[in-house]
Structure formats: C-alpha cells, structure tokens
Image 1 (tube, chains in turn red, cyan):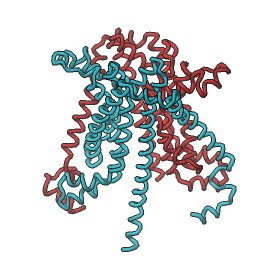
Image 2 (image 1 turned 90 degrees about the horizontal axis):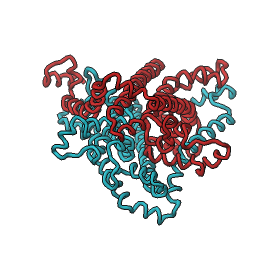
Image 3 (image 1 turned 135 degrees about the vertical axis):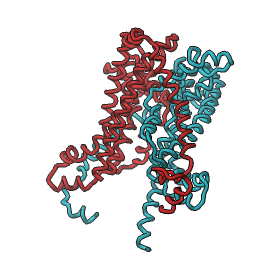
Length: 291
Length: 296
C-alpha cells in the first residue's frame, strides 16, 4: 500500500486524490462513459425536452388536458398504484417464504421469481390474455359469475402485477436474509408474541426495502406498454393507457401532441427515480446503523 | 448457536407454528403458480394446440424466420455495445473518486425508468422525417427510423444500464487492492484488467450479459415505435408475435412466442447457475482468511 502510494507519487504529479489514481485508464473510461451516455441517452432525451419547450404553453396544455389523455393518466396511475400495492403484499409474502421456510422445489420457485424480467412483455401480454379471456383456463371459471378481467381495466392491473412482482421480491429478499435473528430472539424472550415480533421488530427493518420495491414496481408499471395492450381492450376513455396515447398520436403524425404527453411521463419518471434513490439511501443508512 | 437455540424454551422459538408456515407457503406458491407458472404454461399449450406439424409450419414461415434473424442481429449489436460501455463505466466509477460520481450513476440508471414508448419516441424526434437530423438523413438517403438502425438504437437505449449496474456494485465491493498490487508488480493497464479484474468480475459480467440479451431480444414498446412494422423487414420476434396475434393467427403467434419463452427459461437457468457458482466462489473466498491466521 505504501509502495503503491510512493509509486503514484513518482509517476503522476501529486494531486489531492493521487492515492486513488494509481490505476490507469481513468480518463479513457470516464471519457468513453460520458460520450456513450451523451450519444445514446442524453442527446435524444434533450430532443424531447427541447421539442416540448418549443411548444406554446396553450398548445402544450391543450395536448395534455384533453379528456382522453386525462382519462389515460387516471387509468395508468390508478392501475399502477393498485398493482404495486398488491405486489408489495404478495412480494413480501413470497420473499418471506423463500428466505425463512424450506420446501421442495424452493430453488425453482426462487429462479421463477425473475420470469417477468426475462419473459418478453409481448409474450406475457398474449399469455395472460389467453388465460383470462372468456374461453381461457381461468376466464372460463370467472365468466359464468359475471367477472370479466380480460379487455377491462382489471386486466391491465393483472398484467402490471405480473411485471412488477420481481421488483418487490428482489429488494426485500436480501434485507430479510441479513436481518438479525438475535433481535427476534430477544423480542421472543421478552415475551412478544410472534405477530408482535413481526410487526414491531421485523417489519420496521424491512419497511424501507419494501417501499423501494413498491416505488420500483410502480415506476415500471406507469411506463409499461407491451404486456398491457393485448389484455387492455384499448377502448378510449375506458381502458387506454398513456403509452398507447403516445403511440396513437405518433400514428396520426401528431408529433407535438405525442411529445407533450411523453414529456409529462418523462417528468414523472424523473421524480420517481429521485424518490427511489432517496429511499435506497435511507435503506443504506438503516442497514449501516444496525450493522 | 445450537446451544443457544436449545436454551430458549420451545414456545418462544423465533419461527411460526407449522400450520402458519404451511399456510404462508401455500399462499405464496399459489400466487406464483397463478401469476407466473400458468402464463408460461399457456404459451406452450397454445403454441402446440394445432400439433407439432402446425408448430413447425408456423416457425418455418419466411416472415417468422426474418423476424428471428432481425432479433439476433439486434442483440448482436446491442449486447456488445453495452458490454464495452458497462465495463468502462464500472471501471471509472468503482476504481476512482471524482466529482458528480453519484449523479453519473443515477444518469446511467435513467433508461430503466423511462417508458419504452418514450424511449422510441426520442429517437423519432432525433432521426425521424420531422426530427433534428431528418432532412440531412433524407438528403443522403440514410434510413434510421422505420429501418434496422433505429431498432438497434432503441434496443441499445432500453438495455443501456443492464451490464453497468451489475458490475458497478460488484467492482466497488471488491475494491482495487489487487489491481494496485498488479500495477506495483509492473503489469500494464491492459494486463491488470485482463488477468486481475476480469477473472474477479467474470460471473457478474455473464449475469449482466444474459439479462441484457434477454431484454434486447424481447423488447417490444421502444422497438414498436421506431420499426414501422414492415413484414419480413423490420419486424423483430416480439413485433411479429403482435402482427400474427392481431391477425387472429393465435397458434402461429404463440409458436413464435414460445421461442421467446424458451429464451426466458434458458436465461433464468443460466442466471441461477451463475448465482450458485458466484455464491460458492464467495464462500470459498471468505473461508480462506479464516485459515490464514491459524497457520500464521
């Protein structure tokens, strides 16, 4: 370590962070990272921002406040919120069972959690539709009771639950694995019931991760397109999601309208990204304190 | 540990009663079967509804084969591009300190939170007929939107962070002591990377590559915006699935979809093996230092 520092002192002019610059390739890799990031992500995104800024406020407002667009916002955010809430509960349950209990086929179940990450969204969309349509495996039992899921807003929620599940499981799982058994033992020895231990000891430790997973599932659900359009029915005002509005405007060559709606979605993505980052920082502080 | 557990009376053990355990496991597995297993099974059942003959016919269709070729081509561009970027980004973020590092990390994650449809749209705004470069491209007769380059670009965008975000935490956790030692011993930068860093990040790299590949081959929303849906020319496999499905050729749609589902299963299998190998390597490396002080 001292020789490494010395070496750096001889080769590179001594800088404030000279010790950290022992390794080569900083300028090259940072330069390439920034160039690639700029070309692929930042310049195209700035095209969207500039196009939005070039619109007059009245045009922009007219584009995003049309009744059909507002209905799509309500649907997209409402369905995403319900799906993320279901995922928070189901994801916590799945993570809990995978971490705490042993059962045959556990490894397969654990691998299967990532299916929504690996399965293309269009495939998930047609598969869920086939299951829930009136003649499908599940739909045929629901239809006689007057329950329709496919081609209804309820179908959108089902598709969003599918794609959001791994986010919650994979953020909660490591926290549950690292949680200290000693705390639970202490709570049990002090006379807490199992439910009290869960609610007062385990849950507060998991809460930041659960909230992060919830926010990630929500963020993913808001932008989701492929799995939803097959099952949604896509009726204007009823089951038309916001990404589909953008596609519809593009197909009518209404680039300004598409850009305006897209910029609203982009803004919301930014805000969600910042919230998720803050949640993750909170979680790190939590785990840092307990360790 | 076992003595501690024995010291605690049975009724205050830190687990649930068998009935509760059984119920929770059944609920969790029931949910997974309903939401994960059934959709996956439905793909294959629907694909084989007309028998193996119809399945093979659907896959041998020239348009389907063209879609498979285009999907492979797209992944062949997108994955290596993001691999080089991922390694470069992880190297500068994990091995060095500089201003704005956490901001850069957030920017790298950005494509994950952008809706795929918006991702497609931004490329239309840059390269489309009415976009920034549209007139210039039209003058030089270069087609990007509604052509293969646009599909590749949109795919690169949506798979942008995959490899970088696998490698950054891994390389941060490993630190740079080994690389510094290699430097002191006279290795060149390239030798250091090739012989010291690469073996250490091998599993994380494979992990990132297969996830990136799965998403690259399966991307739908972003590609749908820039593709133009020209049969046999600019339809990737997911887009071809959509076209067939909307033409009420359900069996053919599910036949092509089953290839993508197989890809997903293979991806999950490789991922599980990689995780298992990585965990074993990690265990081996944490066991070593325990022995060292004893022998010393």
